[in-house]
Amino acid sequence: MSTKNNAWEYADSIENASHINLRKQYDLYIDGKWVKPSSNKYFSSSNPHDEKHIADVSEANEEDVDLAVQAAEKAYELWSKISAAERGKYIFRIARLMQEQARELAVIESLDSGKPIREARDIDIPLACNHFFYYAGWADKLEYAFPNQHKKSLGVAGQIIPWNFPLLMAAWKIAPALATGNTVVLKPAETTSLTALKLAEIIEASGIPPGVVNIVTGFGDTGAAIVAHPKVSKIAFTGSTAVGKLIQKTIAGSNKRATLELGGKSANIIFGDAPIDQAVEGIINGIFFNQGHVCCAGSRLFVEESVAEKVIRKLKHRMQSLQVGNPLDKNTDVGAINSKEQLKIINRYIDIGIKEGSEFFQTDCAIPTEGYYCRPTLFINVAQSSILAQEEIFGPVLTIQTFRTVDEVIQKANNSPYGLAAGVWTDKGSKIFNLTSKLKAGVVWANTYNKFDPSSPFGGYKESGFGREGGLHGLGAYLK
Ligand code: NAI
Ligand code: MG
Image (cartoon, rainbow, N blue to C red; front, side, top):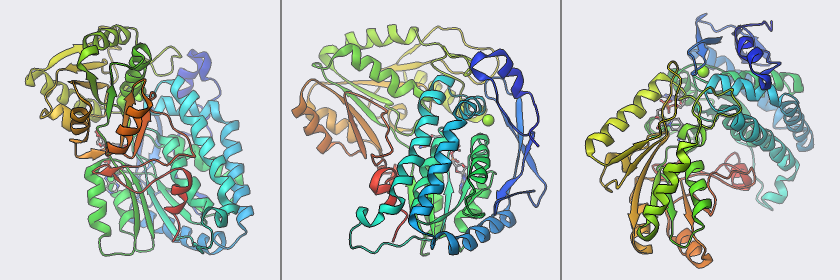
């Protein structure tokens, strides 16, 4: 079953990457068993660093999705009735098993997605475990969370996740669904299925009743089959705004509930009175964390004119020290772009920016000659009307604009079809409170950026979607 494959080659060469255990081929995880896809079709999951094949993954069709939904529906009868404390125990068990396998999960995540091992190890995997721990704790306290409201679970939750935080998004989706007594059919993104399949093994080992969690892999049509299935009561989706809109069309007029976490074009605002060096670190983290494949990336920088020259000079200097390269190298700051398609999208935006004539800056670090890589990139003095300032790029590309007054920056920051997150950097608490009340964003960070915690709700306004995940709000999304 578990066989050595070429993933071991990487593992052998890198000290941090020992003990990874991947199958050559993954079937679908349905009703507590590994089931062959009915079409017998598999596709390759590869490493964006060198395009090498890692493992084969099943392509689920409508028939397979139907099987998974039926299993989840059957399991719901049991799962929604067992004691809440018992449900919590299973979720705790999953969290602990994930922790035990944290190193292996981090290496696989980095291999399959292109994210730096340092981020997978220190952020993604621990946070994913924490989501299970956090929601395990809520399972038998729902009456305290929603006093006298007699909340009930929804049934089968269909969950579709993206490739930027594969295991973490699976945790965000599965943990609250289980804690509230729902059952799950989850589809990971086609370029990053492997940690979700490792999670299926962990779920299997936890002894949770079969069918409570089903993991089906595949492309967009697999996702569409989950969305369209009549026995799915709730859709939880994270991904592009375009697919979010398709999902809304499909479920219009049905009783399906949905939460959609879509794109973003978040403003990171630096005032002249901010601690500048700290703010520069915040800008770097805001846009270059996970190669900028972050829905809440601080991709639009607004700098107060009086300090703009200084901030941009320091930012360029700091960017030159970023190491771009093999995600499995512990010194790597910026890893590989997740896919060839995504690299194409990013490069197309860079070309547009250059044509539009904004000042362009890229670091001159060495980057690998094969694989999907993009240098950290700035566009300075970008016009508000520029495509670059309007559209989500989802890569290591930052646009910079300046402002003079608070009202001006609020107006500019809110002038976007999106409303997911924002950052404010200032020494003045009053300014922070003023901006947090006026920025149309689901999350506003003050003097920090990209800080996540299971207890804090996350979600957007406008084209960034609706509904909240995380915290108490995240429970509410799985209850009626
Ligand atoms: P996508 O929205 O197509 O993929 C996300 C997930 O949805 C994947 O699991 C995919 O298989 C699934 N999916 C695709 N079509 C579907 C359908 N019709 N019904 C149900 N599920 C479907 O995103 P993609 O194509 O990978 O990336 C394109 C752009 O989307 C990126 O450049 C980025 O701007 C944005 N994006 C934003 C994300 C975010 O977290 N805000 C995450 C991923 C992409
Ligand atoms: Mg991959």
